[in-house]
Amino acid sequence: MANPTTAFRSGKNGKIVIQGVGYALNHWEVTETGEVLDTNNFECFTQDFGTGLIGGGRSFSQGMIGFESADFTISGVWNAAQNPFEEPPGLYVSDLGPELILYINESDGTNYTFANTIISSTSVTTDATGAVSFSATGKNQGSYIRPTGNV
Image (tube, rainbow, N blue to C red; front, side, top):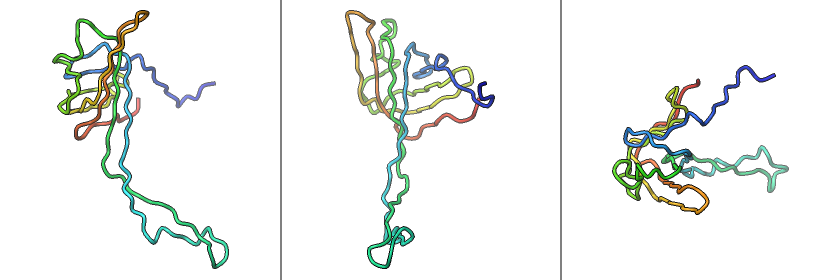
């Protein structure tokens, strides 16, 4: 029997919106990171894990989070009617990248919102046995909003 409190999500209702326009891309990924600032000091040492009076004890590192960032990748099949390099959507290498909303589920509005972005790389792949694909990677340019709430 399934756990009644489990609510798995299907990716089929995801969506990528760039500058207010939905694009027929089929994959996105976000990785959030925080810069760990070293706050190690002499008080990080403890005798609690030692044996005897000589050579005992251990030191444990500590830190705090400094700057936060969110790296993203968006990708999908190239749409000849919407060249991704043109404005909009403007997915070319730039520190003035477009507004980007990445929906986990469009039906309930759960999403990452990037008001400003940096597009750090793009890639186009052409294969004789498949569709032309496009991808762009980048990160937040300033603050971003992560998904909140449960559905």
